[in-house]
Length: 499
Ligand code: GLU
Image (tube, rainbow, N blue to C red):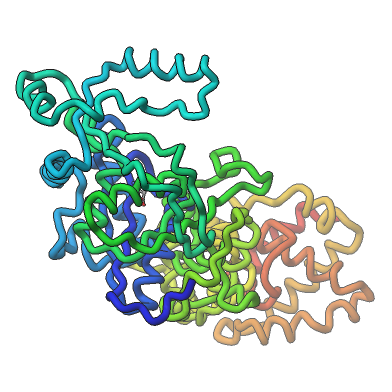
């Protein structure tokens, strides 16, 4: 189904229940709604479905709003933003559900039901024993005279309100933009409850009342709700409201094909944020999990997403969460930053977070941080990877820990002592103001030949001496950042370990 040639302006909503954090599946639903609104010049609404009083909390609502802001999914109407169709919390809309339900009763499209839970259970059991293909509500109260029913309600008898599925309704065909036409057998539709005895609306009712009141044109949500949709269609019809276009998007599964859960690692948006993923990369990754503009791009900017997104290319197959691919995309975004941007937005905040730096009084000049950014960026997949790389720069020379494996492999080896001696002399000859990566490399370059040793045997001991491990950026950059004094002190100290 095409989303072009829309007549009514697009209005979509993301309607999380604040019963927990925002999970990756919900985040992707939010992204698709947002992108669809943006791509069609429409309106993106955030509605908080907080009708479950036992599980909804204000704290969860705040966590969700924070996650939405971090994802950069700005909503046009909703909490904080306001809008003409508010309030945007279902608990603040309770009167409208009651009014709508009562209206349907007065129009003969819904009715009061006085069946007790015990009676309903007994009916269900009897139907099961008869092996009846229909085990839903037996319509016991459907034909109670409306005046009699009203009197019973007024007398205080407990009741629910049930929708009256028209006898001639027939099968319900949901035209789904992702799944195509999905037919639900009329027989399976019983007269379901729209209003509970405790005075609260059911999900299928409240959602449709709100989606109607808010003028929602497209309902984009997880396909765990596809089976609810025929009931919602019946409610739209009873309300005399147009049915929106539905688009049910697939679930996100773990690599083992099972529903994504803690066992697979992080599941909430905040966990990914805290793990150091960039919001742009995370949105990019989730957007492409089940949607592709061309089947090729792995990196797609927010601008492209919000101009090219369409329901046409959304896959109905379950999406598999692939942390490696997410890492790859995150690295792509980091590597695409300029050194200056990386220094300011990634390196410095991480160093402050690690307690290495104080944002108010940096220990080095700007140029130094840009050089550090250039050195670390290519080896950074997650922002926080810079911390491990930079630790050697924020450790006192005498406290630098040596990785025992690196010591064994590179320092406790024949020739390491000579390499360190030669490096020490060569570097000592460089003037303080000449201490740059290029000059350092030029000074060290002739050593392998002079010592008659392979490059690794000469440079690796120097690296281990300076950093404590056998992995670092180029030796010139590594030593430049460290500074001459510390570089020489460490080379001297490493000789204790050298064979
Ligand atoms: N509050 C519902 C949920 O979180 C919304 C479903 C819908 O979009 O209709 O599952």
